[in-house]
Image 1: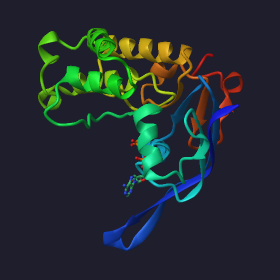
Image 2: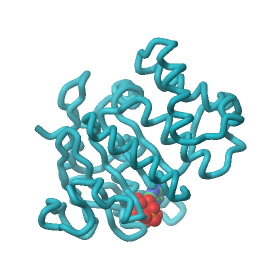
Image 3: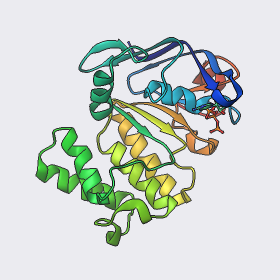
Image 4: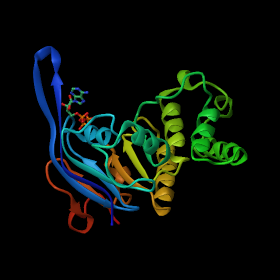
Length: 240
Ligand SMILES: Nc1ncnc2c1ncn2[C@@H]1O[C@H](COP(=O)(O)OP(=O)(O)OP(=O)(O)O)[C@@H](O)[C@H]1O
């Protein structure tokens, strides 16, 4: 049974100063079962991030449905859920990682990860130990654990961003170029976590310019030029 079904999805943007609307994406269809990973590929500006942001409801879709099988609410259309339901889903079920760290100010790295775990109703002691494990896993220097991340380097921010989203073991994880400025060693760490989440049943939608990173990790590829192809037929980017 599908955990996520994107059907006939389309999104337009209004460019106010030009008094025009532009169609960013249209007729997007794909479906994912629990634990599957779809990689979205396509040229710059083809609308990959728009799809992810619409699933996360940063953008409101104009056409189509994004049907998500929620633990709490059952099958719901993310294009139509209330803000309150969406807030619940973002807190408990759907994670989103982009290249940009957007977190509560004046909160240390350690506190941010602990907070993410406490939101999942983990006991304080577990939140503390799991936060340290995540900080170690992503090799964030110890001197940064109790520091505010606004002064971190790009790579440090990215690693923290991924740690915050992945400790929650979300039911659905959206990855928008999360490894963009990471070195090879950090990419390996991210890959390890994704493999583990996938094995534990997390469903993933990811955009990676680094095609090699997706190799062997994703089950399906959605090419913005065409409809999704099962891995066996595509046989290029991913090996199941
Ligand atoms: N908030 C917005 N307002 C107006 N136009 C937007 C907005 N967000 C995206 N767009 C436009 O929609 C189109 C698709 O953008 P999107 O960021 O989804 O592409 P992308 O495939 O992710 O690109 P890239 O690979 O370069 O990140 C682009 O033409 C972009 O300019």
